[in-house]
Length: 352
Image (cartoon, rainbow, N blue to C red; front, side):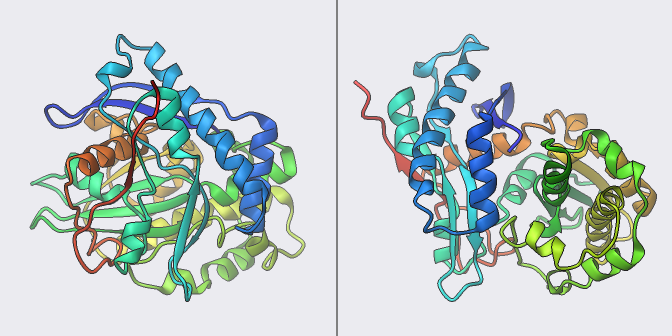
């Protein structure tokens, strides 16, 4: 929630990144979002209000992005909007995943057809609804010469396995990415994130705490699996914390992210290229720790022409293209869905 990532892409021939924009979220709205996510109460009446506010903000972010370019609304075929995740429970008795940011408002304010609600159809088909990034990684980052593990480190980290031997794609959430570290520094220092992992680097990993965190049952599950901040949050963390200093807890959280990513990949391959994307690719302390653990070549998606900050925004633009062309996508080896499906709902503009 450090900003709204927007990407303009051209899918005429492959997928070309044209421009990106990170739009600020007002502090009062951001604080409300923190409260809603932490409470995980989807009956909170504020969700209805914030849903409208985010729709307006996403529309404004779209306009600001276009102002940076030579393009205007008549050039844009569609918007893909993931929305702000509020609740993700694919394994409940009544599975659901809720992202807010009213897509009809986005369509009406911009005059551009908007595709949203990408996860519901996957869940209805028996899938986890997440992650969806492996679909795009397979499209853009596959290699015929190397096994590749693409790790998207957002609030939650997910990994995509692309084998050089076949066309298979496997992906799932490994666990916390930046989310716990962001929440902990927000609580203690009122900062949105730990710049370069400097605060984590100032502390010492508490091995007792780390061992307890690593024993969470989620890390022993096999894919398909997905999770979110409604599970890995400060309430979860506080059930393990004892007398550690705040900096040592941050150091332990960084180590948790690094080790769960490393453990996941090492269970599958001994030789691979590791490609990072998402905000965590800029956390130098985390990247250095991953380099030490894996002892494998590490690059970011920028090395292959895809800005690490905007790869996920590109994903949802690409998914919008797939939906408006009625292209079914196969998430069976990623989310566990039972069949290829259309992802997303289409909202047409009522703008005159």
